[in-house]
Length: 278
Ligand SMILES: NC(=O)c1ccc[n+]([C@@H]2O[C@H](COP(=O)([O-])OP(=O)(O)OC[C@H]3O[C@@H](n4cnc5c(N)ncnc54)[C@H](O)[C@@H]3O)[C@@H](O)[C@H]2O)c1
Image (cartoon, rainbow, N blue to C red):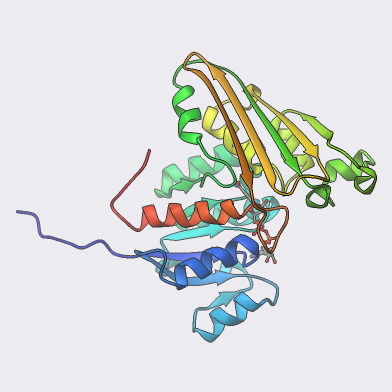
C-alpha cells in the first residue's frame, strides 16, 4: 500500500505590490487561502504593503533575480507587460510555476511560444487566471468545434483610459468626451498595445480561443460609466454565448477591476487544494 503523504503547502512569491499584488497578499495573509504560504515578494518602490511584509519578516526584494528560487513553487506576476517579458524566462528557467496577469504580452508572437518551449524543458506550468472576465472555459470548449467570431466590447470611464498609448497617439482628448464614444476598434494585438493596462482580457480570449484572428475588440469611453463593463459575444458551431460583466474598479487602481485580484485568489485556492475546475 502506498505511504500516505499529506499535500505540502504551495510556496508563493508575489511580484508587484500594487493594486492586485496587495489584494492577493492581504487575502493570503489573512487566512482566506489555505494551502498557500507567502514566502517572498518583489517590489522596487516603497509602499505600505512592502513595509508590512518586511515587518512580518517576509523578504521583499527589489529584483526578482535575488529570489530564493529553491524555496519557491509559484510566482505571481502583477506588474506590467514589459516587466512580465523581463522576468518570465527566469521564473520558468528556475522550474517555478508562473501566474500571469499582464496577459497582453502573450500577443507578442515571439514571447509565449518561447516561454512554453522553456516550460516544456523545465516542467514549469503557466497559469492564466480569468482576470476581469469569465467564461474562458466556454471559449476553450467552443474552440474544440468551430468558432466564427468573438467580440469584446470594453466600456470604461475616460479617467480609466488616461495615458493609454492609443489615446495619446490618436490625440483623443478624454476630457472633451461628454457621452459614450468608441475610441478603438480592431484586433486584440493592437488593443493590448494601445491599452496595455485596460484590455488584458482581449489576450485571455485570444489564448482561450487559440486564435487571435477570431477576436474583435472595441473600447468605449463613457463618462457616465460607473463601473468597468466587459461584454463578450462568442458565436460558433456550439451556438452563441453572450455575457456582460459590470465590474467595480479596484479601490486603488481605476484601470483594474476588483474581480481581477479575486480571480487570482480563486486560482490560488484551487492550487492549494485537491479540487480542480476545468
Ligand atoms: N488579466 C486581467 O484580466 C487583468 C485585469 C486587471 C489588471 N491586469 C494587469 O495586471 C497587472 C497589475 O495590475 P495592478 O492594477 O496591480 O497594477 P499596479 O500599477 O497597481 O501595480 C503594479 C506594481 O508593480 C510594481 N513593479 C513595477 N516594476 C516592477 C518590477 N520590476 N518588479 C516588481 N514589481 C514591479 C509597481 O511598482 C507597482 O507597485 C497590470 O499589467 C494590469 O494591466 C490584468
